Length: 156
Image 1 (cartoon, helix red, strand yellow):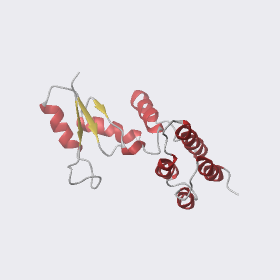
Image 2 (cartoon, helix red, strand yellow):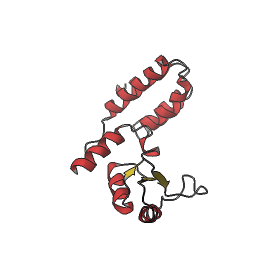
Image 3 (cartoon, helix red, strand yellow):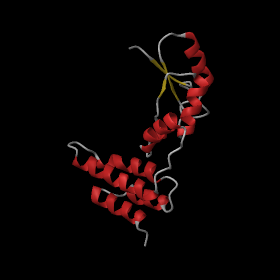
């Protein structure tokens, strides 16, 4: 089935400014195929608001999901029930980041250095995250990265 995804930013805006969901609403009003909204959806509440404003048939979660894979399940639950599920705990986040490191290491062709940015996204805003990011950027192995993440889980 054909559909169109619309991001409420111009190419020149890149990631700056605010996504214009009104433009997506205009697109939805003027075409007969399903419209998928995208842009500035970082929380389940953002998702609900984007759908309400645009009238879109679906939504895309992009940058909001970086380091936050729970965004998908939390958003779906919120849209279905109206109840906002709790955010993951720091330990849940760290454990998921460790599992992610292990999965990349186990995957043929997996590039463990790619985990540097993912760990930064996972740990953003956590106590001690600036130091961990600095140290993760120097790490060369999955074991080093796991050790650093475990330090965040069990601070000395």
